[in-house]
Length: 436
Image 1 (tube, rainbow, N blue to C red):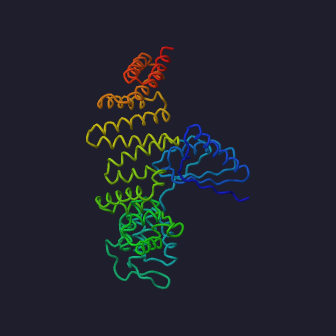
Image 2 (tube, rainbow, N blue to C red):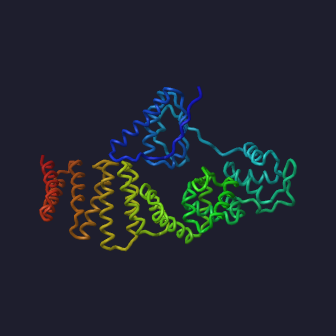
Image 3 (tube, rainbow, N blue to C red):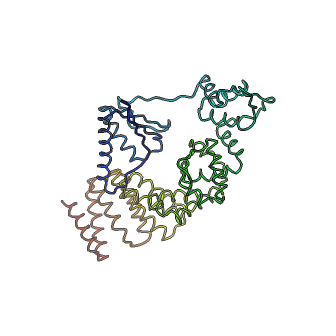
């Protein structure tokens, strides 16, 4: 029986309560195990170095159960990713090393369609690529496109001596040489790279200054050069750079000022024309405004992104988004409005930290303490209530009961001063539990 293949990509369930999120994780694992009972399964999890915490959590649950069923799980990641499952006896780590000379030569022959390159050129390819497969592929394509060699019936020849600087010494130089020869296509690649590794034609067209015919021609050339892959047909097509390094090379070739202009344009177009995308992926707008240097707008969207993640029980992601917003606020001038915004972000961060790391985590105390200091800077503020309650929870769980009692009493005084019956109930509850 042929095994059924299942590919996964980083993603998170759009759910609210954490227990519902966990039930969904368990349901996914149960589904995979049930499928494996019916027939063998090949499950491939690619690019774990880019996976979000929620995806890694699901993968951990799968790996715990995988040895009991007919499932071959293949995980791919870069060396900098350190998996949590190295102690699993059922896992075998395979390190992919650089290609040897024989493998590089075989790859060159395959890329040239069986036509031999001059020995001097092959020697340069072997020496400069150092066995990196992507570099081998891109360098061979660059050589064939550049006219450095002339095609004969069954081989290629050098029309003259090999110039000393004819073959780039780095992958980045090789990629840029290919893009430079594609003329106006380079601008399309740069704008697409600013959008991300994967980008939709509809969004690219909305932000591009090029007319539709020029844009489509440029995309066709990129696809034909195998720098990007196309899925679907225009205007509903989606494009993906063949490799992250190709995207990075195109992106890094932009001047810093041009890059910021692109990011700002993209963020503004997203706001104006793609409200549904902004609603579901506010972190996307936040990233573009951050890269554009538009800090005020970026902070607003990092807060929205954090809240959106919290609503879906992706609390580690929420912590990251709120923290990014707080750090960006520190770069802005100190004003009452900015301080008030910082209070709001700290409160949201404290709530996310309590769930992600536990109520008694040191980060929780630090976050709420910072929020209390900020509240004192802007005077009496309604946000002081949740801040004190967050601190009280930390102290009572840590059994620092004297400090918890003092915090509860401060909370009660605040409730009386504000004539807030709801806050008064919360304060009495805190004091009652502490005294108990």
